[in-house]
Length: 607
Image (cartoon, rainbow, N blue to C red; front, side, top):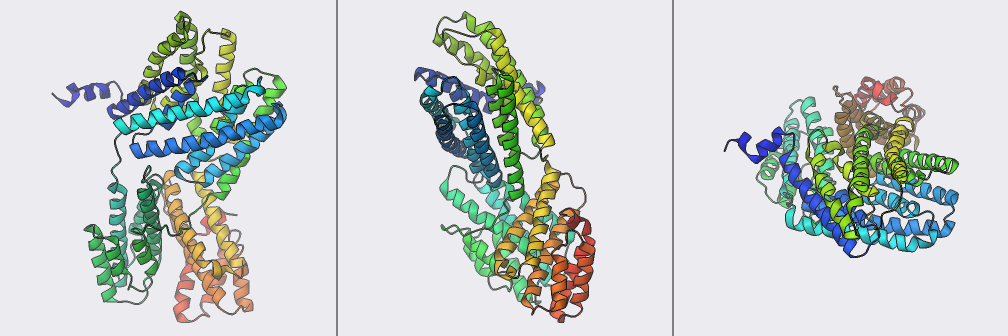
Protein backbone atom coordinates (compact mmCIF):
# COMPACT_ATOMS: atom_id res chain seq x y z
CA UNK A 1 0.00 0.00 0.00
CA UNK A 2 1.45 3.37 -1.01
CA UNK A 3 1.65 6.12 1.64
CA UNK A 4 -1.09 8.14 -0.10
CA UNK A 5 -3.37 5.07 -0.24
CA UNK A 6 -3.00 4.36 3.49
CA UNK A 7 -5.57 5.62 6.02
CA UNK A 8 -3.00 8.09 7.35
CA UNK A 9 -2.37 9.40 3.84
CA UNK A 10 -6.10 9.75 3.22
CA UNK A 11 -6.57 11.71 6.47
CA UNK A 12 -3.60 13.94 5.60
CA UNK A 13 -5.13 14.79 2.25
CA UNK A 14 -8.31 15.82 4.06
CA UNK A 15 -6.27 18.19 6.20
CA UNK A 16 -6.07 16.13 9.40
CA UNK A 17 -2.98 15.37 11.43
CA UNK A 18 -3.29 11.56 11.89
CA UNK A 19 -1.37 11.45 15.20
CA UNK A 20 -3.30 14.39 16.62
CA UNK A 21 -6.58 12.89 15.44
CA UNK A 22 -5.87 9.76 17.47
CA UNK A 23 -5.13 11.90 20.53
CA UNK A 24 -8.31 13.98 19.96
CA UNK A 25 -10.55 10.92 19.52
CA UNK A 26 -9.07 9.34 22.64
CA UNK A 27 -9.74 12.54 24.58
CA UNK A 28 -13.28 12.85 23.20
CA UNK A 29 -14.07 9.27 24.23
CA UNK A 30 -12.67 9.93 27.71
CA UNK A 31 -14.82 13.08 27.93
CA UNK A 32 -17.89 11.05 26.96
CA UNK A 33 -17.08 8.49 29.63
CA UNK A 34 -16.61 11.23 32.24
CA UNK A 35 -19.98 12.76 31.33
CA UNK A 36 -21.76 9.41 31.69
CA UNK A 37 -20.03 8.60 34.99
CA UNK A 38 -20.75 12.03 36.49
CA UNK A 39 -24.40 11.80 35.45
CA UNK A 40 -24.69 8.27 36.87
CA UNK A 41 -23.27 9.56 40.17
CA UNK A 42 -26.09 12.10 40.31
CA UNK A 43 -23.86 15.20 40.04
CA UNK A 44 -25.76 18.33 39.05
CA UNK A 45 -23.25 19.58 36.46
CA UNK A 46 -21.88 16.42 34.79
CA UNK A 47 -20.66 18.42 31.78
CA UNK A 48 -17.93 19.91 33.97
CA UNK A 49 -16.36 16.44 34.21
CA UNK A 50 -16.15 16.30 30.42
CA UNK A 51 -14.72 19.84 30.37
CA UNK A 52 -12.05 18.73 32.83
CA UNK A 53 -10.99 15.89 30.53
CA UNK A 54 -10.48 18.33 27.65
CA UNK A 55 -8.76 20.89 29.87
CA UNK A 56 -6.36 18.29 31.29
CA UNK A 57 -5.70 16.56 27.96
CA UNK A 58 -2.02 15.93 27.21
CA UNK A 59 -0.43 13.73 24.55
CA UNK A 60 2.09 12.21 27.01
CA UNK A 61 1.25 10.21 30.13
CA UNK A 62 3.48 12.05 32.59
CA UNK A 63 2.19 15.45 31.49
CA UNK A 64 -1.39 14.21 31.82
CA UNK A 65 -0.84 12.94 35.37
CA UNK A 66 0.88 16.11 36.57
CA UNK A 67 -1.61 18.47 34.93
CA UNK A 68 -4.47 16.44 36.41
CA UNK A 69 -2.88 16.72 39.84
CA UNK A 70 -2.51 20.50 39.63
CA UNK A 71 -6.02 20.80 38.22
CA UNK A 72 -7.38 18.95 41.26
CA UNK A 73 -5.34 21.06 43.69
CA UNK A 74 -6.18 24.33 41.96
CA UNK A 75 -9.87 23.45 41.84
CA UNK A 76 -9.94 22.54 45.54
CA UNK A 77 -8.39 25.87 46.52
CA UNK A 78 -10.63 27.79 44.13
CA UNK A 79 -13.80 26.08 45.37
CA UNK A 80 -12.95 26.90 48.98
CA UNK A 81 -12.24 30.54 48.13
CA UNK A 82 -15.43 30.79 46.04
CA UNK A 83 -17.54 29.40 48.88
CA UNK A 84 -15.79 31.70 51.33
CA UNK A 85 -16.49 34.75 49.19
CA UNK A 86 -20.19 33.98 48.87
CA UNK A 87 -20.56 33.23 52.58
CA UNK A 88 -18.56 36.32 53.64
CA UNK A 89 -20.49 38.68 51.36
CA UNK A 90 -23.89 37.05 51.76
CA UNK A 91 -24.11 36.83 47.98
CA UNK A 92 -24.20 40.62 47.62
CA UNK A 93 -22.90 41.32 44.10
CA UNK A 94 -20.66 44.36 44.65
CA UNK A 95 -18.50 43.04 47.53
CA UNK A 96 -18.46 39.56 45.97
CA UNK A 97 -17.25 40.89 42.58
CA UNK A 98 -14.65 43.04 44.33
CA UNK A 99 -13.31 40.11 46.35
CA UNK A 100 -13.36 37.84 43.31
CA UNK A 101 -11.49 40.42 41.24
CA UNK A 102 -8.78 40.73 43.89
CA UNK A 103 -8.43 36.95 44.09
CA UNK A 104 -8.19 36.47 40.32
CA UNK A 105 -5.68 39.31 40.07
CA UNK A 106 -3.56 37.65 42.77
CA UNK A 107 -3.73 34.25 41.05
CA UNK A 108 -2.92 35.75 37.64
CA UNK A 109 0.15 37.47 39.08
CA UNK A 110 1.29 34.32 40.85
CA UNK A 111 0.76 32.30 37.68
CA UNK A 112 3.13 34.62 35.83
CA UNK A 113 5.80 34.16 38.50
CA UNK A 114 5.70 30.37 38.62
CA UNK A 115 6.66 27.93 35.89
CA UNK A 116 5.17 24.76 34.43
CA UNK A 117 2.02 23.21 35.86
CA UNK A 118 2.34 25.04 39.17
CA UNK A 119 1.58 28.20 37.17
CA UNK A 120 -1.47 26.48 35.68
CA UNK A 121 -2.69 25.37 39.10
CA UNK A 122 -2.40 28.90 40.50
CA UNK A 123 -4.41 30.43 37.67
CA UNK A 124 -6.98 27.64 37.89
CA UNK A 125 -7.49 28.43 41.57
CA UNK A 126 -8.54 31.91 40.46
CA UNK A 127 -11.20 31.13 37.91
CA UNK A 128 -12.46 28.04 39.79
CA UNK A 129 -13.57 30.46 42.48
CA UNK A 130 -15.45 32.38 39.78
CA UNK A 131 -17.20 29.21 38.62
CA UNK A 132 -18.51 28.63 42.12
CA UNK A 133 -19.36 32.23 42.98
CA UNK A 134 -20.96 33.27 39.67
CA UNK A 135 -22.86 30.29 38.25
CA UNK A 136 -25.65 30.26 40.82
CA UNK A 137 -25.78 33.85 42.02
CA UNK A 138 -29.57 33.88 42.69
CA UNK A 139 -29.18 31.10 45.29
CA UNK A 140 -26.29 31.89 47.66
CA UNK A 141 -27.89 29.57 50.21
CA UNK A 142 -26.99 26.62 47.96
CA UNK A 143 -23.33 27.56 47.64
CA UNK A 144 -21.99 24.63 49.66
CA UNK A 145 -23.79 22.14 47.44
CA UNK A 146 -22.62 23.92 44.30
CA UNK A 147 -19.02 24.00 45.52
CA UNK A 148 -19.07 20.31 46.44
CA UNK A 149 -20.65 19.47 43.08
CA UNK A 150 -18.00 21.51 41.26
CA UNK A 151 -15.18 19.74 43.09
CA UNK A 152 -16.61 16.25 42.61
CA UNK A 153 -17.25 16.77 38.90
CA UNK A 154 -13.69 17.98 38.40
CA UNK A 155 -12.29 15.05 40.36
CA UNK A 156 -14.42 12.68 38.28
CA UNK A 157 -12.99 14.19 35.13
CA UNK A 158 -9.43 14.01 36.47
CA UNK A 159 -9.80 10.36 37.51
CA UNK A 160 -11.29 9.33 34.16
CA UNK A 161 -8.66 11.30 32.21
CA UNK A 162 -5.80 9.76 34.18
CA UNK A 163 -7.18 6.20 33.94
CA UNK A 164 -7.66 6.51 30.18
CA UNK A 165 -4.23 8.10 29.91
CA UNK A 166 -2.52 5.31 31.81
CA UNK A 167 -3.98 2.78 29.38
CA UNK A 168 -3.77 4.57 26.04
CA UNK A 169 -1.40 7.54 26.32
CA UNK A 170 2.29 6.85 25.54
CA UNK A 171 5.07 7.46 28.03
CA UNK A 172 7.52 10.21 27.06
CA UNK A 173 11.03 9.25 26.12
CA UNK A 174 12.84 10.11 29.34
CA UNK A 175 16.36 10.48 27.93
CA UNK A 176 15.76 12.95 25.09
CA UNK A 177 16.27 16.17 27.04
CA UNK A 178 19.07 14.76 29.21
CA UNK A 179 20.92 13.51 26.15
CA UNK A 180 20.54 16.86 24.41
CA UNK A 181 21.93 18.65 27.47
CA UNK A 182 24.92 16.28 27.63
CA UNK A 183 25.78 17.06 24.01
CA UNK A 184 25.42 20.81 24.59
CA UNK A 185 27.65 20.71 27.68
CA UNK A 186 30.26 18.78 25.70
CA UNK A 187 30.25 21.50 23.04
CA UNK A 188 30.60 24.22 25.70
CA UNK A 189 33.56 22.41 27.29
CA UNK A 190 35.28 22.05 23.91
CA UNK A 191 34.72 25.74 23.21
CA UNK A 192 36.33 26.66 26.53
CA UNK A 193 39.21 24.25 25.92
CA UNK A 194 39.88 25.85 22.53
CA UNK A 195 39.99 29.29 24.14
CA UNK A 196 42.36 27.97 26.81
CA UNK A 197 44.71 27.04 23.96
CA UNK A 198 44.53 30.59 22.63
CA UNK A 199 41.88 30.26 19.92
CA UNK A 200 39.82 33.38 19.24
CA UNK A 201 36.30 33.32 20.65
CA UNK A 202 33.73 32.37 18.01
CA UNK A 203 30.98 34.89 18.80
CA UNK A 204 28.46 33.40 16.36
CA UNK A 205 28.99 29.89 17.78
CA UNK A 206 28.62 31.24 21.31
CA UNK A 207 25.29 32.88 20.43
CA UNK A 208 24.10 29.64 18.82
CA UNK A 209 24.98 27.66 21.96
CA UNK A 210 23.18 30.16 24.20
CA UNK A 211 20.12 29.93 21.97
CA UNK A 212 20.12 26.12 22.18
CA UNK A 213 20.60 26.21 25.95
CA UNK A 214 17.62 28.59 26.21
CA UNK A 215 15.44 26.21 24.19
CA UNK A 216 16.39 23.31 26.48
CA UNK A 217 15.71 25.45 29.55
CA UNK A 218 12.12 25.85 28.28
CA UNK A 219 11.75 22.07 27.93
CA UNK A 220 12.86 21.50 31.53
CA UNK A 221 9.65 23.14 32.84
CA UNK A 222 7.76 19.93 32.06
CA UNK A 223 10.60 17.40 31.86
CA UNK A 224 9.95 14.49 34.19
CA UNK A 225 6.30 15.41 34.72
CA UNK A 226 4.51 12.71 36.68
CA UNK A 227 7.70 11.38 38.30
CA UNK A 228 9.34 12.75 41.47
CA UNK A 229 12.62 11.07 40.54
CA UNK A 230 12.73 12.68 37.12
CA UNK A 231 11.62 16.00 38.58
CA UNK A 232 14.66 15.99 40.88
CA UNK A 233 16.82 15.10 37.90
CA UNK A 234 15.31 18.00 35.92
CA UNK A 235 16.24 20.36 38.74
CA UNK A 236 19.85 19.23 38.56
CA UNK A 237 19.85 19.45 34.77
CA UNK A 238 18.61 23.04 34.95
CA UNK A 239 21.50 23.93 37.25
CA UNK A 240 23.85 22.39 34.69
CA UNK A 241 22.27 24.36 31.84
CA UNK A 242 22.57 27.67 33.72
CA UNK A 243 26.19 26.87 34.63
CA UNK A 244 27.05 26.69 30.93
CA UNK A 245 26.24 30.39 30.59
CA UNK A 246 29.15 31.14 32.91
CA UNK A 247 31.32 28.80 30.87
CA UNK A 248 30.47 30.54 27.59
CA UNK A 249 30.71 34.09 28.88
CA UNK A 250 33.84 33.89 31.05
CA UNK A 251 37.33 34.52 29.75
CA UNK A 252 39.86 31.73 30.39
CA UNK A 253 42.51 32.61 32.94
CA UNK A 254 45.97 31.17 32.73
CA UNK A 255 46.86 29.16 29.64
CA UNK A 256 47.19 25.53 30.64
CA UNK A 257 47.42 22.79 28.03
CA UNK A 258 46.74 20.14 30.68
CA UNK A 259 43.49 21.85 31.63
CA UNK A 260 42.40 22.01 28.00
CA UNK A 261 43.13 18.30 27.62
CA UNK A 262 41.06 17.51 30.72
CA UNK A 263 38.10 19.44 29.30
CA UNK A 264 38.36 17.60 25.98
CA UNK A 265 38.34 14.28 27.86
CA UNK A 266 35.31 15.45 29.86
CA UNK A 267 33.52 16.37 26.63
CA UNK A 268 34.33 12.93 25.16
CA UNK A 269 32.99 11.31 28.34
CA UNK A 270 29.74 13.27 28.04
CA UNK A 271 29.33 12.16 24.43
CA UNK A 272 29.92 8.58 25.56
CA UNK A 273 27.25 8.91 28.29
CA UNK A 274 29.73 8.33 31.11
CA UNK A 275 28.43 8.92 34.64
CA UNK A 276 28.17 12.65 35.46
CA UNK A 277 30.15 12.26 38.68
CA UNK A 278 33.15 11.02 36.70
CA UNK A 279 32.82 13.94 34.29
CA UNK A 280 32.70 16.33 37.26
CA UNK A 281 35.98 14.87 38.59
CA UNK A 282 37.65 15.73 35.27
CA UNK A 283 36.37 19.34 35.26
CA UNK A 284 36.89 20.17 38.94
CA UNK A 285 40.69 20.77 38.84
CA UNK A 286 40.35 23.38 36.08
CA UNK A 287 40.71 26.84 37.59
CA UNK A 288 37.51 28.91 37.41
CA UNK A 289 35.21 26.01 36.57
CA UNK A 290 34.31 24.96 40.10
CA UNK A 291 30.67 25.97 39.58
CA UNK A 292 30.45 23.89 36.39
CA UNK A 293 31.95 20.88 38.18
CA UNK A 294 29.50 21.32 41.05
CA UNK A 295 26.58 21.49 38.61
CA UNK A 296 27.78 18.28 36.91
CA UNK A 297 27.95 16.54 40.29
CA UNK A 298 24.54 17.82 41.38
CA UNK A 299 22.77 16.14 38.45
CA UNK A 300 23.07 12.75 40.15
CA UNK A 301 22.34 13.91 43.71
CA UNK A 302 19.03 13.20 45.44
CA UNK A 303 19.19 16.56 47.23
CA UNK A 304 18.00 19.61 45.30
CA UNK A 305 20.64 22.36 45.36
CA UNK A 306 19.31 25.89 45.38
CA UNK A 307 19.16 27.48 41.91
CA UNK A 308 18.46 31.20 41.53
CA UNK A 309 16.15 31.63 38.54
CA UNK A 310 14.65 34.62 36.77
CA UNK A 311 11.19 35.56 38.02
CA UNK A 312 9.14 37.92 35.88
CA UNK A 313 8.07 40.27 38.67
CA UNK A 314 7.29 43.11 36.29
CA UNK A 315 5.14 40.92 34.01
CA UNK A 316 3.43 39.38 37.04
CA UNK A 317 2.52 42.79 38.45
CA UNK A 318 1.10 43.88 35.11
CA UNK A 319 -0.89 40.65 34.73
CA UNK A 320 -2.33 41.03 38.23
CA UNK A 321 -3.31 44.68 37.69
CA UNK A 322 -4.77 43.93 34.24
CA UNK A 323 -6.90 41.07 35.59
CA UNK A 324 -8.07 43.10 38.59
CA UNK A 325 -9.00 46.15 36.53
CA UNK A 326 -10.76 44.14 33.80
CA UNK A 327 -12.79 42.10 36.27
CA UNK A 328 -13.90 45.24 38.13
CA UNK A 329 -14.94 46.98 34.90
CA UNK A 330 -16.87 43.98 33.57
CA UNK A 331 -18.48 43.48 36.98
CA UNK A 332 -19.52 47.14 37.04
CA UNK A 333 -20.97 46.77 33.52
CA UNK A 334 -22.95 43.72 34.62
CA UNK A 335 -24.35 45.43 37.69
CA UNK A 336 -25.00 48.68 35.86
CA UNK A 337 -26.97 47.07 33.02
CA UNK A 338 -28.55 44.21 34.95
CA UNK A 339 -27.90 41.93 31.96
CA UNK A 340 -28.86 38.34 32.92
CA UNK A 341 -25.90 36.97 30.95
CA UNK A 342 -23.47 39.19 32.84
CA UNK A 343 -22.42 36.40 35.18
CA UNK A 344 -21.35 34.24 32.24
CA UNK A 345 -19.50 37.17 30.66
CA UNK A 346 -17.63 37.80 33.92
CA UNK A 347 -16.87 34.09 34.24
CA UNK A 348 -15.51 33.91 30.70
CA UNK A 349 -13.46 37.04 31.29
CA UNK A 350 -11.97 35.57 34.47
CA UNK A 351 -10.71 32.56 32.53
CA UNK A 352 -9.39 34.49 29.52
CA UNK A 353 -7.73 37.36 31.36
CA UNK A 354 -5.82 35.06 33.74
CA UNK A 355 -5.11 31.84 31.85
CA UNK A 356 -3.87 33.48 28.65
CA UNK A 357 -1.81 36.14 30.41
CA UNK A 358 1.07 33.64 30.46
CA UNK A 359 1.01 33.14 26.68
CA UNK A 360 3.61 34.70 24.39
CA UNK A 361 0.99 36.81 22.56
CA UNK A 362 -2.28 36.87 24.55
CA UNK A 363 -4.09 39.31 22.24
CA UNK A 364 -3.20 37.27 19.15
CA UNK A 365 -4.31 34.08 20.86
CA UNK A 366 -7.72 35.59 21.62
CA UNK A 367 -8.56 35.58 17.89
CA UNK A 368 -8.39 31.78 17.82
CA UNK A 369 -10.08 31.41 21.20
CA UNK A 370 -12.96 33.67 20.14
CA UNK A 371 -13.46 31.76 16.88
CA UNK A 372 -13.45 28.45 18.75
CA UNK A 373 -15.91 29.63 21.35
CA UNK A 374 -18.24 31.00 18.68
CA UNK A 375 -18.28 27.61 16.97
CA UNK A 376 -18.77 25.91 20.33
CA UNK A 377 -21.79 27.97 21.35
CA UNK A 378 -23.38 27.41 17.93
CA UNK A 379 -22.96 23.66 18.42
CA UNK A 380 -24.41 23.95 21.94
CA UNK A 381 -27.45 25.88 20.71
CA UNK A 382 -28.02 23.32 17.96
CA UNK A 383 -27.84 20.46 20.45
CA UNK A 384 -30.11 22.19 22.98
CA UNK A 385 -32.88 23.36 20.62
CA UNK A 386 -32.72 20.97 17.67
CA UNK A 387 -31.75 17.64 19.27
CA UNK A 388 -32.51 17.61 22.98
CA UNK A 389 -36.28 18.25 22.55
CA UNK A 390 -36.47 14.73 21.09
CA UNK A 391 -35.24 13.21 24.37
CA UNK A 392 -37.66 11.90 26.94
CA UNK A 393 -35.38 11.51 29.98
CA UNK A 394 -32.10 12.62 31.50
CA UNK A 395 -30.38 9.57 30.03
CA UNK A 396 -31.65 10.53 26.59
CA UNK A 397 -30.09 13.97 26.94
CA UNK A 398 -26.75 12.41 27.83
CA UNK A 399 -26.88 9.98 24.90
CA UNK A 400 -27.93 12.71 22.46
CA UNK A 401 -24.96 14.84 23.61
CA UNK A 402 -22.35 12.15 22.89
CA UNK A 403 -22.30 12.55 19.07
CA UNK A 404 -21.61 16.27 19.47
CA UNK A 405 -18.76 15.49 21.87
CA UNK A 406 -17.24 12.91 19.53
CA UNK A 407 -17.51 15.35 16.63
CA UNK A 408 -15.54 17.79 18.79
CA UNK A 409 -12.41 15.74 18.07
CA UNK A 410 -12.42 16.86 14.42
CA UNK A 411 -11.60 20.58 14.89
CA UNK A 412 -8.89 19.64 17.38
CA UNK A 413 -7.12 17.51 14.76
CA UNK A 414 -7.65 19.50 11.55
CA UNK A 415 -4.74 21.71 10.55
CA UNK A 416 -6.96 24.70 9.80
CA UNK A 417 -8.89 24.59 13.08
CA UNK A 418 -6.60 22.94 15.65
CA UNK A 419 -5.61 26.31 17.16
CA UNK A 420 -9.26 26.80 18.18
CA UNK A 421 -10.30 23.15 18.60
CA UNK A 422 -10.09 22.90 22.39
CA UNK A 423 -12.17 26.03 22.83
CA UNK A 424 -14.91 24.60 20.59
CA UNK A 425 -15.36 21.74 23.04
CA UNK A 426 -15.02 23.76 26.24
CA UNK A 427 -17.53 26.42 25.17
CA UNK A 428 -20.01 23.80 23.95
CA UNK A 429 -19.86 21.85 27.21
CA UNK A 430 -20.08 24.98 29.35
CA UNK A 431 -23.51 25.74 27.88
CA UNK A 432 -24.90 22.19 27.80
CA UNK A 433 -26.61 21.50 31.12
CA UNK A 434 -28.29 18.07 30.67
CA UNK A 435 -31.12 18.56 33.17
CA UNK A 436 -34.50 16.96 32.48
CA UNK A 437 -37.16 18.27 32.07
CA UNK A 438 -35.77 20.99 29.83
CA UNK A 439 -36.34 24.60 30.83
CA UNK A 440 -35.58 28.07 29.52
CA UNK A 441 -36.24 29.88 26.27
CA UNK A 442 -34.37 30.35 23.03
CA UNK A 443 -33.85 34.01 23.89
CA UNK A 444 -32.23 33.13 27.23
CA UNK A 445 -29.95 30.55 25.62
CA UNK A 446 -28.83 33.00 22.93
CA UNK A 447 -28.18 35.71 25.53
CA UNK A 448 -26.07 33.29 27.61
CA UNK A 449 -24.20 32.19 24.47
CA UNK A 450 -23.48 35.83 23.61
CA UNK A 451 -22.14 36.37 27.13
CA UNK A 452 -19.76 33.42 26.76
CA UNK A 453 -18.46 34.71 23.42
CA UNK A 454 -18.05 38.19 24.94
CA UNK A 455 -15.36 36.84 27.31
CA UNK A 456 -12.62 36.50 24.64
CA UNK A 457 -13.64 39.85 23.13
CA UNK A 458 -13.28 41.62 26.48
CA UNK A 459 -9.96 39.88 27.11
CA UNK A 460 -8.71 40.84 23.63
CA UNK A 461 -9.50 44.50 24.30
CA UNK A 462 -7.83 44.31 27.69
CA UNK A 463 -4.68 42.61 26.34
CA UNK A 464 -4.45 45.25 23.61
CA UNK A 465 -4.99 48.30 25.82
CA UNK A 466 -3.88 47.44 29.37
CA UNK A 467 -0.13 46.81 29.47
CA UNK A 468 0.02 44.95 26.12
CA UNK A 469 2.16 41.80 26.14
CA UNK A 470 3.86 39.97 23.29
CA UNK A 471 7.28 38.44 22.70
CA UNK A 472 8.91 41.78 21.85
CA UNK A 473 7.48 43.54 24.90
CA UNK A 474 8.37 40.63 27.18
CA UNK A 475 11.92 40.80 25.87
CA UNK A 476 12.06 44.54 26.59
CA UNK A 477 10.71 44.00 30.12
CA UNK A 478 13.44 41.43 30.69
CA UNK A 479 16.05 43.92 29.45
CA UNK A 480 14.67 46.52 31.84
CA UNK A 481 14.96 44.10 34.79
CA UNK A 482 18.54 43.20 33.86
CA UNK A 483 19.63 46.83 33.58
CA UNK A 484 17.77 47.92 36.73
CA UNK A 485 19.50 45.10 38.61
CA UNK A 486 22.80 46.44 37.34
CA UNK A 487 21.97 49.98 38.46
CA UNK A 488 20.99 48.70 41.90
CA UNK A 489 24.37 46.95 42.18
CA UNK A 490 26.18 50.17 41.31
CA UNK A 491 24.15 52.10 43.89
CA UNK A 492 24.40 49.64 46.79
CA UNK A 493 27.61 49.30 48.82
CA UNK A 494 26.61 45.76 49.86
CA UNK A 495 26.59 44.53 46.24
CA UNK A 496 29.54 42.12 46.72
CA UNK A 497 27.59 40.25 49.40
CA UNK A 498 24.91 39.51 46.79
CA UNK A 499 27.41 38.51 44.12
CA UNK A 500 26.46 34.83 43.78
CA UNK A 501 22.70 35.37 43.67
CA UNK A 502 23.00 38.24 41.19
CA UNK A 503 25.32 36.32 38.89
CA UNK A 504 23.19 33.15 38.93
CA UNK A 505 19.99 35.09 38.22
CA UNK A 506 21.64 37.06 35.43
CA UNK A 507 22.91 33.87 33.81
CA UNK A 508 19.37 32.53 33.72
CA UNK A 509 18.04 35.86 32.48
CA UNK A 510 20.55 35.73 29.66
CA UNK A 511 19.02 32.42 28.60
CA UNK A 512 15.52 33.89 28.79
CA UNK A 513 16.71 36.89 26.76
CA UNK A 514 17.99 34.57 24.03
CA UNK A 515 14.64 32.78 23.99
CA UNK A 516 12.48 35.91 23.91
CA UNK A 517 14.67 37.50 21.23
CA UNK A 518 14.19 34.42 19.11
CA UNK A 519 10.41 34.43 19.64
CA UNK A 520 10.29 38.13 18.82
CA UNK A 521 11.91 37.39 15.46
CA UNK A 522 15.00 39.43 16.27
CA UNK A 523 17.18 39.13 13.15
CA UNK A 524 20.22 40.85 14.67
CA UNK A 525 22.20 39.59 17.69
CA UNK A 526 21.98 42.98 19.43
CA UNK A 527 19.83 41.89 22.42
CA UNK A 528 22.09 38.96 23.20
CA UNK A 529 25.21 41.09 22.81
CA UNK A 530 23.61 43.61 25.14
CA UNK A 531 22.94 40.89 27.69
CA UNK A 532 26.58 39.85 27.54
CA UNK A 533 27.52 43.51 28.03
CA UNK A 534 25.37 43.57 31.20
CA UNK A 535 27.23 40.52 32.49
CA UNK A 536 30.63 42.09 31.85
CA UNK A 537 29.53 45.38 33.38
CA UNK A 538 28.24 43.61 36.47
CA UNK A 539 31.60 41.94 36.96
CA UNK A 540 33.25 45.36 36.61
CA UNK A 541 30.96 46.87 39.26
CA UNK A 542 31.75 44.04 41.68
CA UNK A 543 35.49 44.57 41.13
CA UNK A 544 35.12 48.31 41.73
CA UNK A 545 33.34 47.59 45.01
CA UNK A 546 36.41 45.66 46.17
CA UNK A 547 38.63 48.75 45.83
CA UNK A 548 38.79 51.52 48.43
CA UNK A 549 36.12 54.06 47.53
CA UNK A 550 37.91 57.07 46.03
CA UNK A 551 36.11 60.12 44.59
CA UNK A 552 36.85 58.87 41.05
CA UNK A 553 35.46 55.37 41.70
CA UNK A 554 32.43 56.85 43.46
CA UNK A 555 31.76 59.09 40.45
CA UNK A 556 31.97 56.14 38.04
CA UNK A 557 29.60 54.09 40.21
CA UNK A 558 27.13 56.99 40.27
CA UNK A 559 27.18 57.10 36.46
CA UNK A 560 26.68 53.34 36.29
CA UNK A 561 23.76 53.76 38.70
CA UNK A 562 21.92 55.66 35.95
CA UNK A 563 23.38 53.80 32.98
CA UNK A 564 19.96 53.42 31.32
CA UNK A 565 19.77 57.19 30.82
CA UNK A 566 23.42 57.92 29.99
CA UNK A 567 25.12 54.75 28.72
CA UNK A 568 27.80 56.45 26.60
CA UNK A 569 28.89 58.78 29.42
CA UNK A 570 29.05 55.85 31.85
CA UNK A 571 31.08 53.82 29.34
CA UNK A 572 33.58 56.63 28.79
CA UNK A 573 33.97 57.18 32.54
CA UNK A 574 34.60 53.47 33.10
CA UNK A 575 37.11 53.39 30.23
CA UNK A 576 39.05 56.33 31.68
CA UNK A 577 39.08 54.67 35.09
CA UNK A 578 40.37 51.41 33.59
CA UNK A 579 43.58 53.18 32.52
CA UNK A 580 44.41 53.86 36.16
CA UNK A 581 43.92 50.28 37.37
CA UNK A 582 46.45 47.44 37.59
CA UNK A 583 46.98 45.68 34.23
CA UNK A 584 45.25 42.45 35.27
CA UNK A 585 42.08 44.42 36.08
CA UNK A 586 42.35 47.06 33.38
CA UNK A 587 41.76 44.76 30.39
CA UNK A 588 38.44 43.35 31.65
CA UNK A 589 37.31 46.80 32.80
CA UNK A 590 38.15 48.39 29.45
CA UNK A 591 36.34 45.61 27.59
CA UNK A 592 33.24 46.15 29.74
CA UNK A 593 33.40 49.88 28.91
CA UNK A 594 33.69 49.18 25.17
CA UNK A 595 30.76 46.72 25.28
CA UNK A 596 28.66 49.29 27.15
CA UNK A 597 29.23 51.99 24.53
CA UNK A 598 28.70 49.55 21.65
CA UNK A 599 25.35 48.43 23.11
CA UNK A 600 24.10 51.83 24.30
CA UNK A 601 20.74 51.27 22.58
CA UNK A 602 20.20 48.09 24.59
CA UNK A 603 20.66 49.96 27.88
CA UNK A 604 18.39 52.83 26.79
CA UNK A 605 15.47 50.38 26.44
CA UNK A 606 15.37 50.23 30.22
CA UNK A 607 15.09 54.00 30.67
